[in-house]
Length: 182
Image (tube, rainbow, N blue to C red; front, side, top):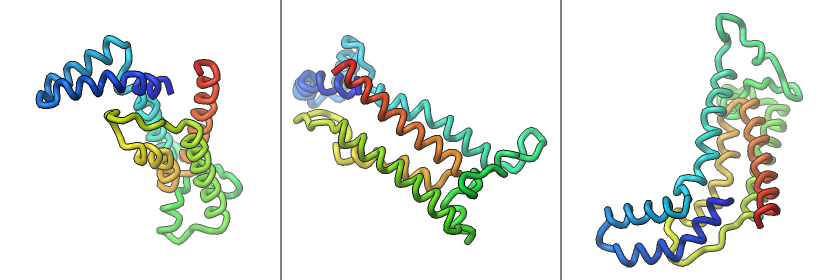
């Protein structure tokens, strides 16, 4: 959220740089980075949460796809949530024909919950368009909120639960930060 505020605050100065150095790409990049540096703003700050979470989800995924860990049977694969094994992914269950009603309900509800939190986040923290602001189109930013729900279809149930906890925590964190910092 703070990264979004900083980008919006710097947008007029970035537009000015783009106008001034329109034909000089390298100079524009250098001046843009200097502006970010002088304002103590990282152009990659909004990517940090995703970069931190990616290895955690990867580790969870790998723990739940290996039948043995350190030479022992993977006991985690025998654990269930409402009779659905934590190592089950919806895509795998559907492709192997093992997706029963419980699998559809549990993983379906998980995916819907992640999408709901994504929609709440998208609506609550909508970025107002700033004319000339460089970056990703706002429609694409809105769609990114739902990528986590799509990922939950492919990963084991345990990783999906982690993703739900993460998006919910992030929403709560952003609400608190908005109240504290305005």
